[in-house]
Structures are given as C-alpha cells and as structure tokens.
Length: 151
Image (cartoon, rainbow, N blue to C red; front, side, top):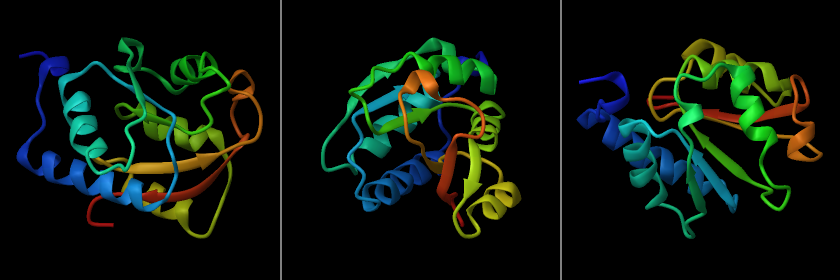
C-alpha cells in the first residue's frame, strides 16, 4: 500500500487519544482543524477530536501531505481571519520544520523539548501570534508548549 494509504498502528491509536486529551486540557477552543488527507492523519484526528468538548470545523486538505514548511505556511495564509484557533494535523518533517520556523520565541523549555524529541506520531506544539493569517511568516509566533507521547 502507498504511504498515503497507510493506517495508524495500535500504538498510534492510543497516542492519538492521549494527544486529544492533552489538547482538550489546554482549554483552547479550536475553531478549525486542517487535516492531511492521508489515512493515518484522518484516523489520528478522528480519535483525538473525540476528547474535545466541542468539535471544530474540519477541512481535509491534500496539500498538507508531504508539504514543506513553506507550503504549509501558504496553506495557513489562506485561513479566514474568523478562525482564531487552528489545528494543523500533518506530517514530518514539514510540521516540525514549520514549528521551528514560525517560533521566533519560546516559553520555558518548550523549544529544547521539541528539539530533543522531534515530532513523533501524535506530538503537538502550541504556537501563538498576533495578526491575520495572511501575515503569518517565519519568526512571528511564540512556542507556548510542546507535548509528545512519553514526554
């Protein structure tokens, strides 16, 4: 089977649900989820979102699959400004590269933990910035937190 059609392993299913619980515990009300069309990202999202108090609008975007950080920024730049809190469910190395590039600053040891652990399946980084999605560019965000399974 192709990489795009590869399903989650059993461990990935467990970690997706845990990531959903951790994201729900942040108290952030997500408005929009942009998810790769790959089978494993769709499965990850389906398991994670079950832990949320309210399901955000979900858009399955094929451009996220195998996207570079620059390509991901271009997708994010198209986000309507009424979406204040967004989730991106994608793939490495693009997602880790995106977090590294966007984070001009970081709180506490979040960047060190992200650098040390990378982005295994179900890991997430919480980034914040001020401005419209069209203005999202390298260095404008703050890395507020990072979590990975076994973190």
